[in-house]
Image (tube, rainbow, N blue to C red; front, side, top):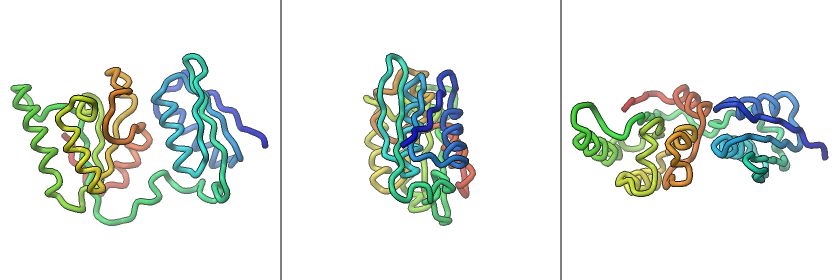
Length: 201
C-alpha cells in the first residue's frame, strides 16, 4: 500500500489541516503520513483524519511529529463530508470566549462575572450548541481553573467545547487542558459558519 507523504513543517494553523483536506479530496489515498513541527498541529491533523474515518497513529520524530492515517473500509466515501457533517439544522447557539474575565475595570470582578456567566449558560437549554475558547479564554479550560467543573457539566449535557490549540501552545498550557477538544482555526471558522447565532465574550 502506497503512503502519501506530506511535509507540513513550518506551516501555522490551520494550513496543515487544509493541505491534508485538499489531498484527501483530490487523491483519496489509502494511507497518508503528515510531518508537522509542533504538537498542536499534530493533534489537529490527527483529529481531522480520525473524523474522516482513518486509523491514526502519531510518532515523535525528535522535535517533529509524524501523523499517519490508514483508511478503513468506506473511508473514501466520506471524503466529501465536512468535519461538521454530523451537525443537523436545529437552532444552534455558539459562544465565543476570548478572555478569562468579563468586561473591563476590575479583573477580580471580571473573573467572577465570567464564572457566573458560564455557570448560567445551561439556562439557554438545548439551543446551546458549542463553546469556543480562544486567546486568554483557553485559561478557563486548564488545571486549577474554577471554571473546569462548570464546563465539564456543560459537556455532559451535550454541549461541544473547542479549545484553540495555537492559543494553548502560546500560553504553554497545552499539557494542562482539562476539558474540551483541542481545535484549529478551520474548525472555528466552520463552527461560526454553521451556527445560527454567535455570542462573543
